[in-house]
Image 1 (tube, rainbow, N blue to C red):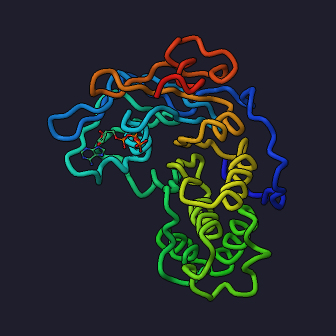
Image 2 (image 1 turned 45 degrees about the vertical axis):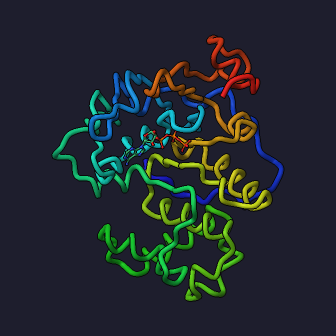
Length: 276
Ligand SMILES: Nc1ncnc2c1ncn2[C@@H]1O[C@H](COP(=O)(O)OP(=O)(O)OP(=O)(O)O)[C@@H](O)[C@H]1O
């Protein structure tokens, strides 16, 4: 169901704790997923249930395949040179690995925000107008309404309403990242994939973006890669812990219990800082 109403303006420091999951039904079902680049398998045997309307955090040491995993969920993996993905991935009845899948339609439903803010070198307005035009929203009035809603959703409207035609690259890093979230939201996705969205930001901007992510919970399904365990603990109501076995990334444990009561000794060691 496409989200309509804007979420309230952000309030720094009022992040609610994440658990338990609000609507614990599975939206994306992953079974025996493997990713290889050329001859090298970097991720194998991953079976994971991503719950609808929750924030799922992907955690684990560098190189264990978190980003590779994330990229399979909206087929960004297709543009990674030499990447091969196998296994089973189902999203709302859709086979995500179907070679005939309409990728543009898929990426409207499953949007992505990257580590570094990457607005187009265009005006603030055009950054949001362009994807709408590309996705066939012909009515100008509708586009303008959706642009305003998306900017309100990310708490940017009051900051930029008077300068929508100014260059997006003139915004601060944190504002640029919120604009990138708005660029995904303007297409009314169901899922938002986020690859370390706060790691390139200063602490204050990072807190604003983190607060924004929490406010998206319930209306969107968020899957986020983060190296910041404190952040994962604060925002996630579901988590998946990846680890390198030999040279291959594997899923060790998943659930909403991970931070309070990890079942696997490796998870406990990683979360305590003893490993990783
Ligand atoms: N396009 C690519 N071609 C070849 N190898 C790749 C490619 N992308 C990633 N890899 C390799 O796959 C492995 C997993 O990388 P990936 O970025 O998915 O891990 P990660 O857990 O997200 O790491 P980090 O936390 O450091 O971002 C690494 O060894 C990486 O070098």
